[in-house]
Image (cartoon, rainbow, N blue to C red; front, side, top):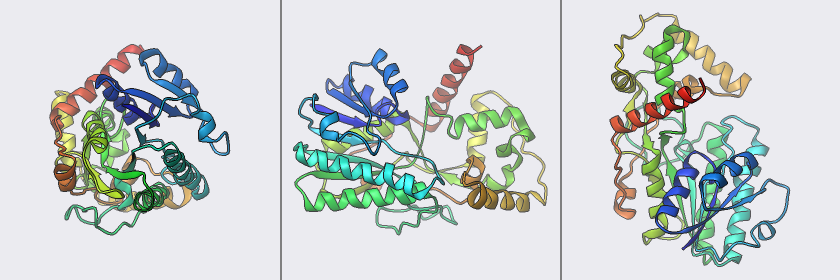
Length: 335
């Protein structure tokens, strides 16, 4: 089969491209990052197409020399969490519409769109886990734009011959990303100098729904293999949400470090509240602590299990160990 992967040079995209090629498929990577494209070319047999920024050449022109495509995986996204609405709308919604139009004209069989847990918005309580039918109240501009694109993908799948499915990815982690595992490892070493450790008591009960990147790539691939109602939306992540407090303990154990929580300070709650308000409304940039403090992130993956036959293979402990080993190798390489 011939597959097109937009965003194939990104964190999840690279793993998906490698998986597809290991399965014997031909891959065309559509990317806007020329530097990452050159690095991918050095390690992959994928055909690289660079330059889908808007405005710019039409996709038909950019993809004129590619083989007939059987399926599209649309992972490319602008992830500026609180970025300008017009920019995120252009990069996440308009580009999706262009790719849907191209796929229809090219008679592609299935279009897989990777959405995000952020379309739900943070929950004030860890339970219940959001099902696909839950109301979406995105708080970030990124979540809003991804929801807009997701709705267009679903509508397209119901109105055209192109089969579509949107996958709402959980909090993806693993080698290649600093997200939460490496962040906590750094916090354990820096102690009070790091806001994750300093505000531990304010965020320790918050939950995130982690999915190891290799598992997520397998789930994305399954979305072109399994029969699915066109226009469907499916949550895709690991087995269970985990609290930040539990993650601190797991990362500390993996690093063989003793972990003791910082002393609770009464004013830290007020300070963090003021800090979060400043980041959301003035700075327009939410760091990791602000993201975690905003609420709980959890969703049901029962549909992925039933429809995609998806089962995570990498345990949280193993995923943490692999991520920390990658981080150690990266730091060693830069010495």
